[in-house]
Amino acid sequence: MSQGGGFYATQSSPFGGSPGGGSIERTELSHSIRPLTAAQFWKATQSHTDAEWQVDGIEIGQVTIVGQVVTINRQATNCQYSIEDGTASIEARHWMETNSDDNAKWGHIEENTYVRVTGNLKAFSNRRYINAISIRPIDDPHELYFHLLECIYVTMMLKHGSPTGLGDNAQAGQNANMNSSVSAYTAQPSGRSDANPEYARLPPLQRQIIEIILQRPERHDEGVHITTIVKALDGPKAEANNISDAIDHLMDAGHIFTTSDDQHYQVSQ
Amino acid sequence: MSEDNISPRVNSSLMPKFVGQHVRLACKVLSTTDTTAKVLCSDGGEVVVKFTGGDSGISATYVEIIGKVVDPSTIQKACCINLGPELDMQLVDKTIQLIHEPKYFKNIFS
Figure 1: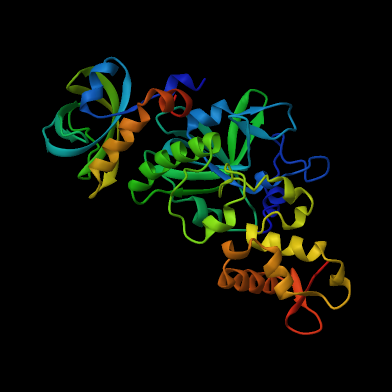
Figure 2: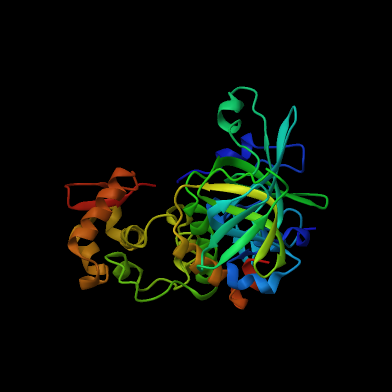
C-alpha cells in the first residue's frame, strides 16, 4: 500500500479522535498491520496521549484481532462490539457513515461468532477500543488458529529477528545486508532509508538502485549507465534478472526514467 | 478490567489445571442427550459437556464450548460457538500446546 493516510481523515470521532495530521509525525510503522491477541492489546503502552502505541517497545500502527463477538450494541451514530478471544475482552466500535449502505457492510456480524477486527487503537479516558476499519466474519475456523500462531510468530520475530535459514529464494541475497529484525510487518528501520525517506517503502534492491543513481554526479548530464549501476550493486549477489525487474518496477512506478538512451537512468525528483 | 475474561484454550489433558475456571474447548461432537454432550477433544480425550435441558446450542460437527471446568472430564457450558463441518484437530492441539508454553502464555495469551 502506498497511501494509508486516507483512513485517518474519514474515521475521525468525537472520542479523542484523530488530530488530522498536523503535529504528529507519522512513521512508516503507522501504516503497518500488527496481529495481536486481546491480552497484548491491553499491554500496549503510550508514552503520552499523542504518542504512538507500542507493544513490547515496538510501535504499532493498525492492529488486527480475531475474537468472539459477545455483544453488539447498535446506536444511532456508532456501533460497539464486545469481543473476547480467550485472552481478554476488548471493545471495538465503528462510526456510522451517512453516505454509504452501512448495513450491507456491517449488518451481517452476529453475536457468538468469530470475527476479524482490523483498525486503530484508541483510548478515551480509561477506556480503550479499536476504531474499526473492518469487521468481518470468520468463515473458516482455521483462520482463528492461524491468527493465534501468527501472533506468536510476529511477536517472536519482532523480538528476536527473522528465523534464519528459511531457504528463502531471491530475496535472501537482497536482504543479506539488511538488519535481521526487518519483517513484512515493520517498515524497514534501517539507517539508510532515513536519507531518502520517500523511497523507504521500496524493496531493498530498488532502493539500492535509487541510491546508486543519486550518488553519481553524471546523472545530471547523460544519466547513469546501467553497467555502472550493476557494478555498484553487490555484483554476483544481485542477479541480472532481479536487477532488470527492479529497474522495470522503478520505471513503472515513475521513480526513475531513461535519459539519452534506454541504458542511462536518472531519478525523478 | 481485562483480567476477568480470560478463558484459555484447552484440550482434555489440560482441564485438570483449570478446574473451577472458564476455558475454551474446541471439540468434535460425538453424541448428545437433552442435558449433556459427549465430545472428542483435540488430544483425543473425551469430555462431557453439561447444559440446561435442550439448550445445547450445538448445530455443527465441530464446536467451541466456553464453560466452567467442573472436574477434569466435565465442563458446564456457558456458550457454544459452531465452527463448522471441518477442523484440523492436530493443528488445534499444536496451537493449544504452544499457547500454554510459559514464555508465550505469559506474554501473549494472558
